[in-house]
Length: 134
Image (cartoon, rainbow, N blue to C red):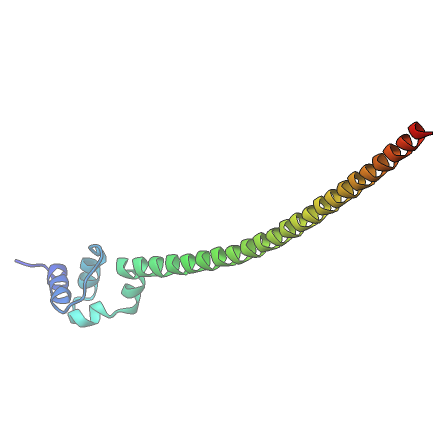
């Protein structure tokens, strides 16, 4: 023969209500509220606050809130990281451009020095040729 707790569980399960874990409070409430129907026992606010399903649902809701906050923090970190990376990329680009300009200036300076040296050697050669003729 079925006791009241088993009957209550079967009635709720057949109505489509699923429990995540067995609820040991069923038997206590059915016995404490003998004169009441099963529907009144099921819908008791105190029972609802202490049931496993409610505790698990509250935990899962809380953990999903925490996960949402973590996701939001990760997104904010990504935004900050991307901004920092773009700033660093801009700085390195400016440094590369400056370095290229410096290399170009050095190259043009060395080319100007080379041309000056060639002109000086050409003038010295002509001066030597002029001295040799005299």
